Image (cartoon, rainbow, N blue to C red; front, side, top):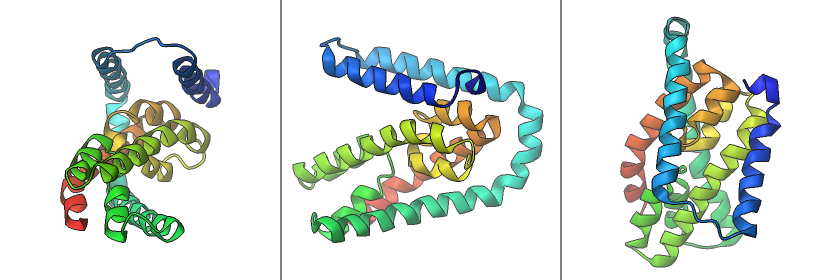
Length: 197
């Protein structure tokens, strides 16, 4: 489907939605967004189900690649936290690491860090929301040439919110890898973030 319209279509729709939200006061309820997300994930599941034989046969070969991708995502996120700390000088290094270790899971990271300090909660929420948005914009541009390694852009979001864009650009195999990647990170983040604070 993405080949028919071009990878930039996803970016254009995102920008159009962003501009609409900035230019109007149209309200979109959380319930509506939840239903849309469920429909997208259902569509991804149907797409994967139609190609299950091919996915299973190649998935065994991708186990080691998936483990490397998870390790690279964690390492890259923490390095990003260190670089941000040295560029900005705040917040403290441990909090900068904790914010980056949220890896896109803004609802957990923001809430957890807000329990320490509201400012940290704001930073944790905003930086991880921006990571998700960055994935929506960037994966369609990088996903054709770097369809597996670019999955790490989304961090934990690759098992849910960014899964549709990854599957539509990278294909069903990338979708399976993205789902596993996001699921493992979702299990690890509640351990890593508190350990760093």
